[in-house]
Image 1 (spheres, rainbow, N blue to C red):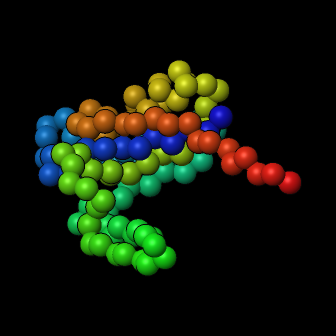
Image 2 (cartoon, rainbow, N blue to C red):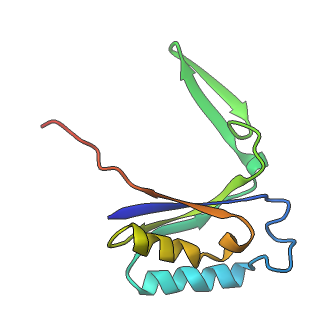
Length: 116
């Protein structure tokens, strides 16, 4: 089953605390997950200030600079993994270096139910 591991952190603290992961450590962990055959994709994201939020309301497109809402933690990156079950996905997510200074939300990827 596919799981999306969404990495959240306070981007002001992400790289400033003593326990903060460095890029090399993050790359090493991603390569370990890749070599295990569990990695489908993983990417860090640029700072939240570079985000643009898009909404369609009443047929009109609205584009706003920045994230959808002000939050204490921001989406910093993701891993898309293949795992046997939620327990295995949680073990993989727990090893993500940024989990030490933020959080990782683990969600199953839902298969679209297409009528054919």
